[in-house]
Amino acid sequence: MIIDFHTHTFPDKIASLAIEKLKAASHTRAFTGGTDGELLASMASCGIEKSVVLPVATNPEKIPHINDISAEKNKSGKLIYFAAMHPDFENARDELRKIRDLGIKGIKLHPVYQDIDFDDIRTLKILEYAEELGLITVTHAGLDIGFPGVERCTPKMIKNAVSSIQPKKLVLAHMGGWKMWQEAAELLCGRDIYIDTSFSIGKMMQDTPYYSDAELQLLNFDKATEIISAFGENYVLFGTDSPWSDQKTAIDDILGLSIADDVKGKILHKNAERLLGI
Image (cartoon, rainbow, N blue to C red; front, top):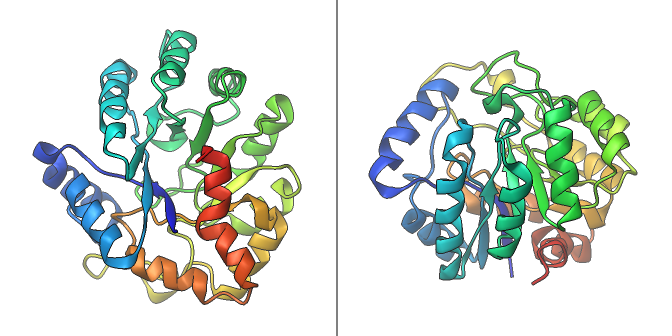
């Protein structure tokens, strides 16, 4: 089994527009059209059994609607929809309880898109409520390719937050901090924090010529292995950030690492199964 812990889809009627808008902001290639159907087809082609879909709420007013849709879509089986949450949502405690009662496994935060620091008290309250309810929290970590220079979830901010809340079900996307990997490994290792491997290993694929070759480079296999070792083999989850990475290539990247086969198994599915309770 392979579980992709980090994917995104959009409603069919707006998927094309959303993909084009995000491509324009990031100058990167999309490997699917961003619909559930295309994600499922990609999964089938490379042997992924389940994918976690992470909705991002840029507007707190949209939270209930997004989460009701996530609950309904979870009935399909192969796609595990998380809920969206925004630190400015006024009824966060009630909504988080509803999320739990609907059987949704966790929530997604994106400090950059939501324009709030990760160690802001509003974010800390969300983390605390989610932890009390046994929900997983996945957050974007590090820089974001669509917002050059914007720092809303640095390793230092994450350290401040986890020192206060001490969550046990926090997942830092993009190997703990996109383009801030060394600092993340130094400040956050040994804290029982999960990381996912999405959009962090190998090389970015640009949509049209925009970045230099150096800018396209992500973690090489040696550096990726170092970060996995720093956070611990039991705390690393396979993720792709589909549609922004090719799922088959991302699997091959994990298989190409110089780590034991049993550790690869933990990354590709066992750690996710344990965290998701499946």
